Length: 332
Image (tube, rainbow, N blue to C red; front, top):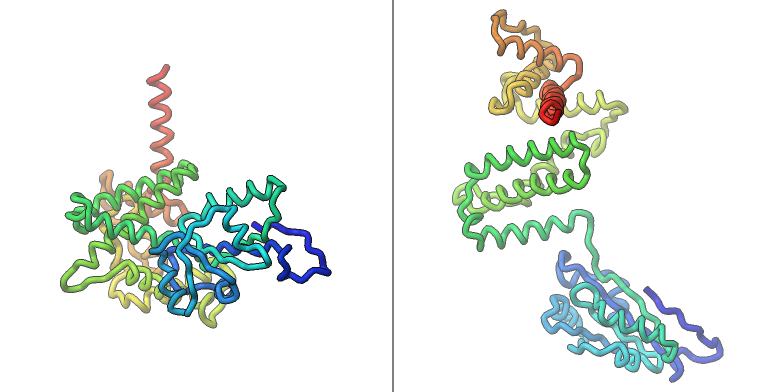
C-alpha cells in the first residue's frame, strides 16, 4: 500500500513542503527474531525515527543491540503525519496484524484531501515460508499436552484407535469429493502425527520429536527419488515405482516379501497387499485350494489386484450403492 504524492522537481526533497515517508515494518512471529530482510535493515538504519507501540515486541532487543533507538510510542495517524513533515522518514515496527487502526486512520486522512500525505510503504521485514503454520500447530500441541487434563494423560496405545478412525474419515472425504471436508480431515490426520510426536518427546529411553519425524521422512523421500535428487532418470511412473521399490528393498533388507505388511488392516486390503508383493517379486504362489467364504474373498481380492482394482475401495463403492438402495426402499 503506497500513497503517491506529486513532487515539484525543482524543490529539494528535504524541504519543509516534503511530507516525508512512513514505513510500516511487518514481521512474522514464526521467524526467529532478528532475522530481518536486507531492505528492512536498510529502512531501519536510514530512518529519522523508529517507533514501536509494543514494548515487549520480540524484535526490539535485536534492534537495540544493533545500535538503533526505538521509541515505544503509539502515535495517532495525525501525529505520525506531523512527525514526517519536512521530508523525514519514520519507521513503525508493526505489532499484531500490521496496525490496522493506524493504516485506517491514514487512509481517512488521505481521503479527506486536507492533508499533504507522506508516502506510505508496507515493508515485510520477515514473512512466512510455505509450511510455516505447522509451527503454530506444534506450539498449540505443546500447550495442550501441558495444560489439558485429557491430552496430558494420553499414550500412543490410547490414541491408536483415533488414528484409524481419522484415516477412514479421510478416505471417506476423498471418495465423497468434498473439498472442505477433505481439508478438515487432513488436519485431523496431521494432528495425530503431531500428538504422537509430542508424546514421544517424553519417552525416558528413546525420545524423539516432530522434527525427528520430519527429518526421517525427508531423508527417506530424497533417497527414494534418485531421479529427482540424484543422477538417475525416470520418464514414466513405472520407472519411478521401480526406483522406489529398489531403494526400499535396499533400506529394509527383508528376508520375506511379507515383512512390513500390517496384518491388522481390513481383510480385502490385506489380501490385495499380499498379492501385490507376490506379483512384484515375480513369485508363483498358488492360492489355497480350500473352500469357504474367506478363501473365495481372497481369490476375488487377488484377481482385483491383478487387474489394477483396489478391492477395498470397490467393496466400499458397492456398499454405498447398496446403502442408497436401502434408503430408497425405506422412503418408498
